[in-house]
Length: 321
Length: 272
Ligand SMILES: Nc1ncnc2c1ncn2[C@@H]1O[C@H](COP(=O)(O)OP(=O)(O)OP(=O)(O)O)[C@@H](O)[C@H]1O
Ligand SMILES: [Mg+2]
Image (tube, rainbow over all chains, first blue to last red; front, side, top):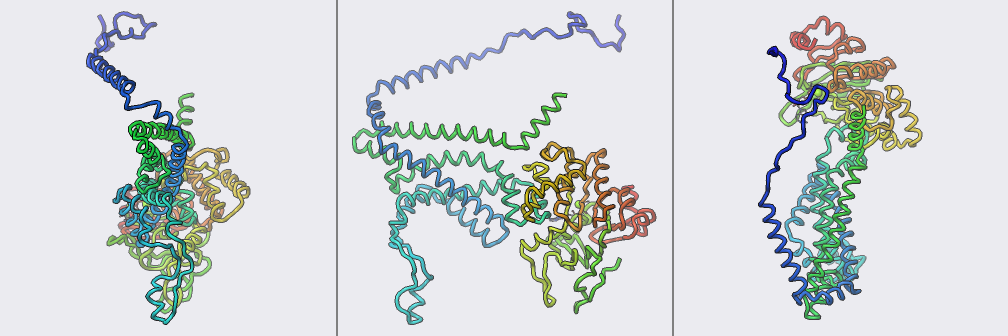
């Protein structure tokens, strides 16, 4: 008889071989999954069949035009627009976020107004609006303000303008597109950068200030680098979104842009649908590349993040001993 | 301790410039956050080379006062001089003019500060932390700054950790790096805000040792602390604050051994 204080012994294996026997159980069946897979397979087969047999897709025609010179040029314009609009947008975003957090009421209000306007107005509307700014002024001029009012009062002739260029030379469709996209992006980036800056512990700013660093130095050397952890991931998404939104500038119209080119070919040849499919394929391809780039950027970003690295190193060294 | 530092009083009865042997002079310092008055007239002086310990219950305004000294907080009334300079303002013909951000930053260079939560820069190595301000603010050459940083890290016993990152260090080590970082600017005054309160008990000693060394070398220090042993051993002066005023001050051994004030006695009976 066992004494009551002794724990009950498991029956079976001896003390040396104390590992319990592996679990042998019948797994739960999922008949629903099989049914769903079957249905999907049939649907996929129908889809592929349609792609192959429906002549409206006109694949040879599509492949012939998809890589023609104007289309490739369109891809180039689209990429250029994406990169430039993002670079401008990010710079603007940082500036506006800093203004917003500066504690200067004039700058903060200005920043708020800017984000309010450019987040409220749709990008498509902005693009068309900027494309038509030439209606307001024929020439872009630099001079003293209100000269047409005060010069006659002083009995002066002529004007006080030093510099003038025709609006159409400055505000080309490309410039209009770039301005519309960059200004709009700046507003979104401002919010992202602001969230990033606010995520940095206040003690960091105080430590930097206590060391005698000015506000600008503190921002550049201490706050902004730490805010990047929060800023970079959503910015990657913004790049992808920007690439897709460049198709909006075909409404300006910016005729060299990818979507405009593909549509133009479709309209000219009265065979539009294959060109729309070509557009899908182009955007899919570039966006997928960007997403892959984003994946590696984010990974190497946490890799380069010494904090995370250090944590991993510590964990490993502890596990080793 | 009276609130009238030696110096020529101006028309308003306020001194124009404190005597040279005074590092910190607070004269009727008030600080309010909105309608909450946290400091209600602090008068005190810290002489060069002196270690002043500040004790008091939570919320009494100790941190706020310390942060007023290097102008991290703007005082709402009174005057505060450090090293003979009015902090954060310029006085001309009896009027105060606020200093620009850059000028305030310049005033802060002579004042080192050590925080309860260390506040090391996590994206920089220990070396990066220590040379950041000398290189960026004082425009020292990197080589020169690194050499001095190694000296300082040696002094706080962390020369072998120069290339580590803050996260890889214990709390006590981080706080010693923070002290080295502050010393790298060659401050004339060091402020400590409960430097050991966030530390595990067994790590408190190593930080206090470094602070004692500093005191022995003649550094002027204002230390907010709950370490009464430290206050007794190295403090030249002890201030007991409660409710935004200095309730009692004097030689630490006397104040701690025989408190005159009822509030001091009540507080000490709780912490000792
Ligand atoms: N930025 C601020 N805004 C509003 N109130 C504040 C601010 N900083 C401090 N206070 C208030 O001022 C009072 C004094 O705070 P302080 O941090 O100076 O106290 P303390 O003596 O350092 O306390 P502890 O021992 O807990 O650190 C507290 O009531 C606190 O809530
Ligand atoms: Mg405090």
